[in-house]
Amino acid sequence: MVFKCLKCGKEVEKVIDRVRCPFCGYRIFSKKRPKTIKKVQAR
Ligand SMILES: [Zn+2]
Image (cartoon, rainbow, N blue to C red; front, side, top):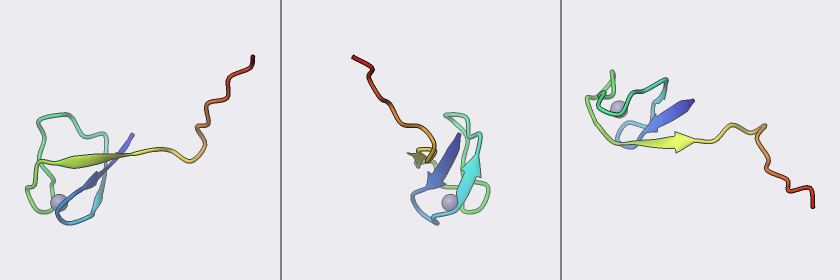
């Protein structure tokens, strides 16, 4: 999964919850959704 640092805007892969941004040290990330995932309910 890809996360985006909310401070510097860099994208980081596989960020564990407590980890800090390797670029700026910020701790808040936003999850980025993969394009390919689409939920379709068949019913
Ligand atoms: Zn950052």
